[in-house]
Amino acid sequence: MNQLNEKIENLINSSKVFLFMKGTPEMPQCGFSANVCAILKATGADFKSFDILSDSEIRQGVKEYSNWPTFPQLYVNGELIGGSDIVSEMYNSGDLQELLKS
Image (cartoon, rainbow, N blue to C red):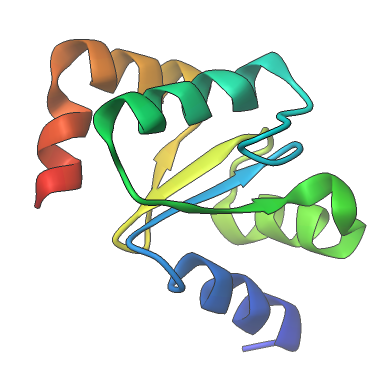
């Protein structure tokens, strides 16, 4: 495994719930990132995040690592859940809350 992928995995595994996003939870830099942060906060989830705008190498690497071209990207228990649309659907159906409890 290359160093970049190792760095990405270390980030993802640093928390049960991990979000690659534009900006920070306190100051999101796009509406989709803001939406996912709001949903996570509404569930009471404890999560860590990484501002992909601060590191172009990580930003590009995560796209390749996940084979998912857009941000934000939410990971739970090391698994890619998806972006804003998927997280919104899962939250509205209650599936996200169940996943976060597990």
